[in-house]
Length: 96
Image (cartoon, rainbow, N blue to C red; front, side):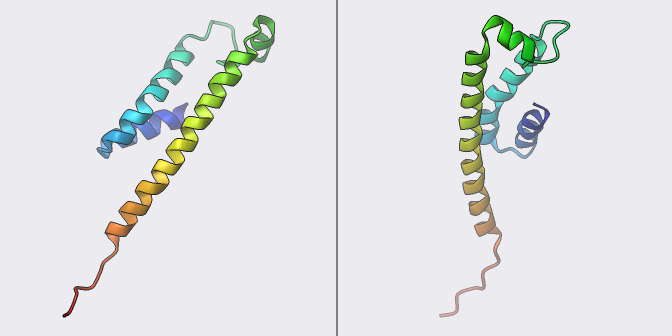
């Protein structure tokens, strides 16, 4: 959760608007889930609460959606890194 929020803030600071807007809903959802944890629970994924209330299926669905999101972000970051590294290379001038 902290890494997601940090990545979102870094994208805002570095003015990568597309990636910032892509990460903002997930970071907001993580903060919302953390704030809504009832007092006395160990965290968002409290093992006893998941099995007692039958919430395992919904938590698995949420986890799979986040996994897909992070895989998508990995390939977007990889593509953007490739483009940035191509522009950073110093090319000698063409001599004709």
